[in-house]
Image (cartoon, rainbow, N blue to C red; front, side, top):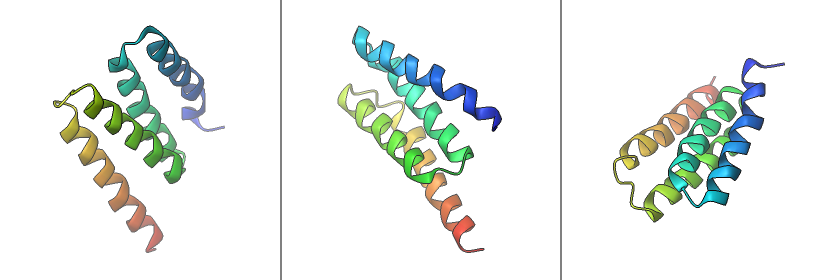
Length: 87
């Protein structure tokens, strides 16, 4: 069992609670963190999906301060994924 496995249920609960409350800021934070968890687990498809969701939400509520970090993380995932696949 990976150490990150126990994080997923808590992050999914946080995302659901944030959506239910209508406060999307914690949803973005939890989604971004969940993307990193999936990345560490080697699940690039889910990692990119979560990161794209966080990026879409940040744009939707105009949290422009988060956009650079999300885009850098997306770029890092792409670069690291390509590096792993080229070995």
